[in-house]
Image 1: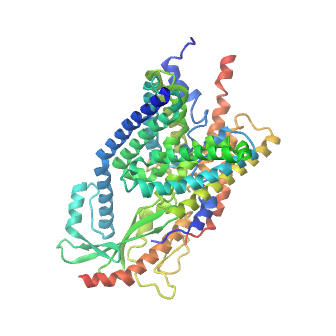
Image 2: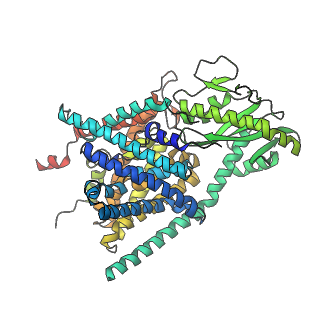
Image 3: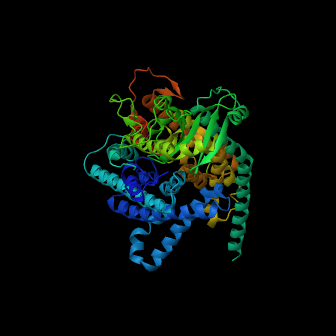
Length: 197
Length: 212
Length: 206
């Protein structure tokens, strides 16, 4: 059986299989926040890094540690622990060695631990049986795709807030969901772009 | 200091308890889960060889039927299945595993071919991660029925064994309906299925005939 | 000491006024993912009800023993364990549905509803009340999902629970099966809900 090329996976994860717009993951924290482009960019950058690293890391843990020991059924717990530990580690490192970076991005890191997209990426990686390089590509691509979607949505919302007054009940999560739906519709147009082989 | 020690002990005990609970549930259900997988594969193999199976058949009866009429054979790194008639001697056909990357994940299926490897008996996909209602429709009858009786020949000069084209645009006998709205899954299937069938005809078919 | 709401009020809160999906905007991921088929929705609902109730109950039973500092880890462990159990059981007894649901059963672990209830309610309240709270919230979630599935499956597939309910000639709204349809349906539902149910605190103040 031929394997999907990592670069193809990278592009597919950003456009055609966008983890937010096609798999619905990572929307919760965003729907409650109503901040703008700047925080979206900060959150996005952190997500790309964490998602790429943890997906690749979990791939190693699963195939090199859990399976040889016959402990695959604990993988959900292990993945979450790996993610939480990794985020904690990154937070400590950034705080210690890159203080200015910490002040701008650091606040987002704890929020990432509960981001279902990070955990979801590892889950999909297992279901689709990716190898290490594919996991890295898929994780990075998913992160970039997530960031792209979040950035676009927050930019649209900012514009919307400045202009019209919305009908009662529509402001906040309702309009955000509809905007996201339109974006998902737009991204469907990318599906002709990627040939799997 | 004491508080920390207490926390660690507590965490350890809780982890132990829940890990045991989970392990117990897993242990009790392992056999069933594995049995499900085996029966599923057996059912698919019987289906693509056109061996009739009652809808309400029990798992045990299915396995009995399977063991009576199917023999597996290893060749070229794959496991193929030989299907026999009820007499246990005349060959009914061969079941060939096929698979490849789909749009969302690996797709796995079985193709039943006639004893002379000239035609397809039937086809079925049993594992995939495609979108339900779109790519997922590869498991539906209307899609797999198209392959029944498809003539097989090794791919030469770029002439595929079959093509998947838009609904209603078929011009040749080996052009079949793709799934509307699932372009990627359809292209993926077209690619790996042609490859696998070609591989079977060129490499595996010869070695099976030898082993008989 | 403030008057603790009775069990009935707690239950109704989760079901409607403080509905986890439409009011608190939690548990969105699974809401959008599984509602294109009613049967998947129902299985997900059962999985969530079980997990929320058991987790809330367990966290509540342990609330006086769990050290403050590690409570998040303990809660995550408890939730994850129940989810794994649900996952194993679905794989064993409903293998086809397990494949259809894919990663979304495991994603119940990160479903903010469960963690939310554990943190804000079960941690401070007796087991009976916590169980009722969990039940109310999870049933509120289930109702919303069933409503969405009733819209998406017939329009997208022409069926409900696999039984054809719309005439053969009906042209399927394929978009309802796919992501955009999910977003739109939920968006409209939230809109309708917010229109008719303004923040309940404002109502009580009057």
